[in-house]
Amino acid sequence: MPFRLGLPVSSPDFRRLWARHDVREGVHGAKTFQHPRVGDIAVEWDAYPPRPPPGPLMIVYTPKPGHEERLRRLKAVADAGEPHEEEPPAV
Image (cartoon, rainbow, N blue to C red; front, top):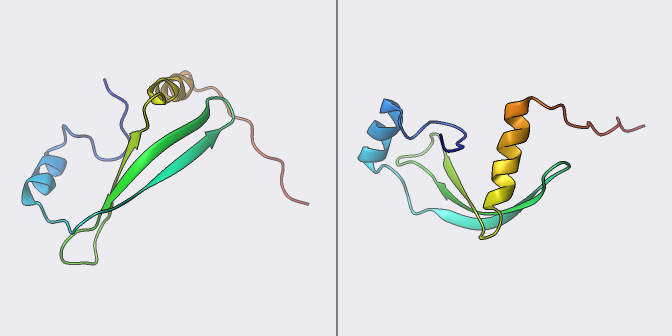
């Protein structure tokens, strides 16, 4: 099963909302997530606000070429339930 966060594509709610096309022009950008076990994961993102506002915001992250394997490693870490290292509290 592909790795997804949020509302699954197979969800009836997702299909109903997607079919309505109630989104404004999206905004987009790029971001790099830094994970201590997997490394940097560079993604491009698109945000789609609903019409009329206010309402939920749909954000879609797409890995940049070459970073797909890091997402697979991230999923493997999450599936294994391996604890991650916490940063020490600020003093």
